[in-house]
Length: 231
Image (cartoon, rainbow, N blue to C red; front, side):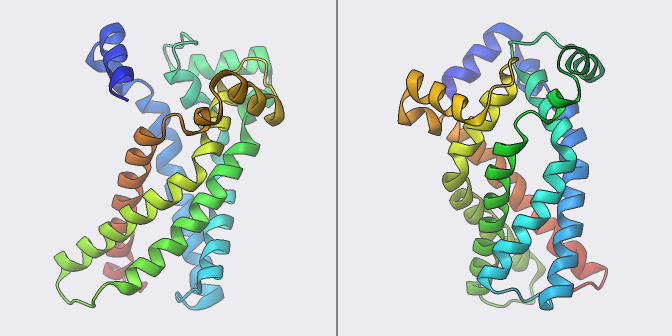
């Protein structure tokens, strides 16, 4: 991770570390909204906000499948925008080039492995989160409650990231390849060039990003639903 960071700084200076922030926000903000609203609705209607472990896996997975399928074009644009293999200067240019060269199919590149990664991740995450949260001692102190939610979210993110990392590597490689290869070809390519270890490439930065983002998101979510009387 440090080697990649030094390379980015050497080639693009400090601003290179924020490359792709606009398409990332365009994907993340509405995607998080879709996920949490769908998940909250299913938790409330199907199990009275007290899901079992199996129900948590199903609810988390279905909510992510819905949000991920809708937001996949923004995911493709984000990945391409951040890659040095493409010289996109704006998100609109990236969108136009993808449509021109690859058509609508290009905007759904990697949807399969994206769902293979995100559906289990969200299902496992929600299960781990609910379980860890249930182990925390009850407290009326808002600071302690927020700390408990953040800790539960962080640990759940670590566990879920480790399990789903191979799917993330496959998804990213598919979205970066201009030929839109299939899943089996991409898996073979990764294995032939990097071996089994290739499927764990980028685990540390992804785990750091996903765990922190998820922990903050769940802490804010818990605070909001309690503040507006939905819990």
